[in-house]
Length: 229
Image 1 (cartoon, rainbow, N blue to C red):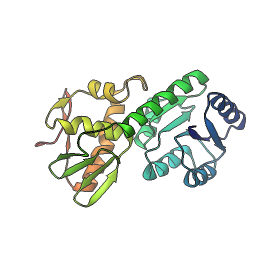
Image 2: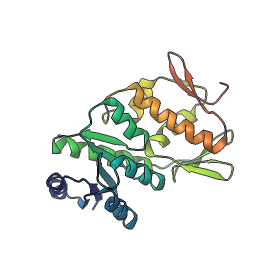
Image 3: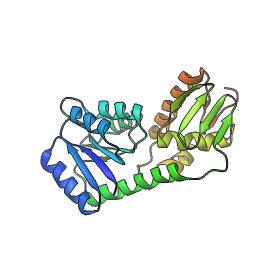
């Protein structure tokens, strides 16, 4: 049975969501503030985490950021904020998806199923080779780590998929639309900023890891990996 953590300060809403998901066959732990959410997260293993955007004691974005430093567990933000900038901030901090309140429970369930399928496909996919390499970078295809020398950094599921797509064919130029279709199609409404934010976050990780710039914007076209600037 899949085990979820729901961190939501609206107690009636939290209990309704938990009741619905438990009827669908999931086990759900509820916490009503960010500090309790963090305590539950570090004490148990969860298959998916649902985070309210605004929480007492520790807000959802801060909690998302802290969890993402520790794990690649799928994270969905529950938010009343509908502005695209707010959504981008959540994605930039490591959330995999978001849903805006008020939402239909069936939509929530469909998004959860999509996230779980994507995560399981990434985690369980068998590869002929364990490593994908380019110059000094090595992508660990089982642990979702990228290495440079002896140092490594963890990737989210989205970052891993993006890295694998572009690293397989360095110097190829990929449009934002193509990248979006490979990673978010069916999960998020298309936005160039969503792609740009993920590229930016991954570029920063690689720069801090290696001191090198591997992602390059191609004006009017998209992005390419490797090669000269």
